Image (cartoon, rainbow, N blue to C red; front, side, top):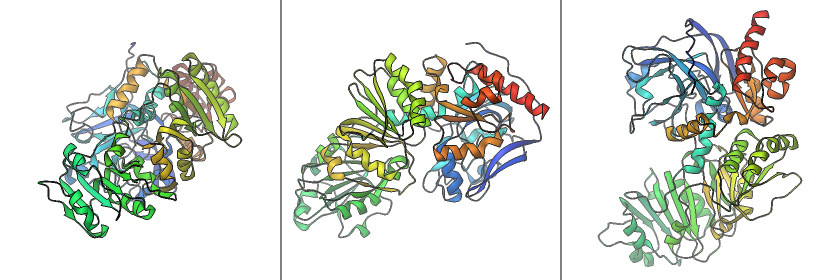
Amino acid sequence: MTEEAPIQRPIPAAQHAIQFVDAGRIVHNRDKAVPQPGPYQILVRMEAVGICFSDTKLLHAFTSHPRKSEVLSGLDASVLAEIPSYAPGSLPTVPGHEPVGRIVAVGDKVLRHSVGERCLIQTDYRHLPTASANAAFGYNFEGGLQEYVLLDERMIVEPETGERFLIRVGEEPSSSAVALVEPWACVEASYLYRERSGPLPAGRLLVVADAGHAVEGIAELIEKARPTRLTALVADAQRPIVEAPGFDTMFVDDLADVEPEGFDDIVYFGAAAGRIEVLQDCLAFRGLINVVAGGARIGRAIALDVGRIHYDLTRWTGTATASVTEGYAAIPADGELRSGDRLAVIGAAGPMGLMHVVRAASAGWQDLSITAADIDDARLAHLEAAAGPIARSHEVEFAVVNTRTTELEPGFSYVALMVPSTALVGDTVAIAGSGCRINIFAGFANHTRAQVDLDRYIEQHCYFLGTSGSGISDMKSVLRKLEAGELDTNISLDAVAGFDGVADALAAVEGRTTGGKIMVYPSLPNLGLTRLSELAVRFPTVAARLHDGRWTKAAEQELLSAASRSDERG
């Protein structure tokens, strides 16, 4: 890899920054102070930051966003008080959690980071819990949509592994390509997250059975993974079946009597829709509900909390038989594609949908077919131009479908949903074939409920998957592909901007009018939103450096130069 010496620039006293100051209120602050790093702190100059749909959620929710609240543990209050970029609650914050930057200053007690390092920034602080989520860069800690950002070394080293959240990266890839690793890593994580195919060992187990329903498999369940606590709400005749030898079962008469912290596993022998809807609220973080219908039918759609699938990693399984073990046996090991899969990507022509399509098309699965569904012909044409050649080069059957005019037929073995529409969640079950994995990638807010035909879900052995964010390993995996030339993350880039273009960029992302990602360059604060298709008019020398319409490092370098010259003339 060719290394270039970083350019040393003086650190100014003030900077441009984008700030969210209240729900729906965005400000381009042209005079935000550049913080001086304390003993444990690191100052990073931002090179590029991607715009994410999640930024729009923070803008609208602000104080009610689960990642904007205070850190509850993992850092002492005295340490948090020393970090000027900590901005919980109603404090203004800087968004931007898809960044790449370079370390320009460090405090005298910083041990793991050095001036001059170019870094991809992992932004999801899962070791710092909030009341209903966890802390994150770009939420309750200021993010990358500013020229300089301050980080504290005490919060950016993973406690379990000792790995840095600032991942070193070489000089060869463009800033945009590195910043785009974060959203690509989120896609990667959604397929590689490991599912558990049995009850949580030493977990909290709730068994609920309707009167008259057969109860089978409890002894085998407990033998496989002995819970710390077993709570049961069952009829008197069923108590002997639920009681385990040598285990103290807690029997209750009403769900109001169960533990408020929730259960890691809920096994329900029955088919009452209302009871299922109530039981899901008893799930703990990463909790799993197993509906054992025992030959009965639920008979109507249930209001299923799809937000918790995405953010709390809750899971649903079930069986039409009376045996609890069959429900667990239907759970896949992970969310990965399989050879022979018939994949539908719903909302495929948007930025994240394109990533899902390209990942699937280039992964090397045999006998894979991809149906890329959207409702915009222009965006579908863009998707066909970008992903079609990749699919065909890997002998993957590929088709784009406008679902306004063409209805998808049932039979898909994998569905990836990009659009946060509750109606579409129900549609994914309707088009599912046997054993279908349904990747709910669209980020529904917690406690968003969708009407789901759980009878069909169980009968078809469907399985809802959902993850939020990515881990260090996911980011390193994508970064390796980028640096090895196996993946060009810039394929997903549709537009560029400076700070003056951020408001328009957020509106475009929220309105789903962009066919790809938008990259913000903090060193070009006055640049408005500019689509790559517009470069020939606005910046012809930049357009000349695109490759088949795709963003390149040469185009990025020319933009930084040309836009700077334009600012000087203006």
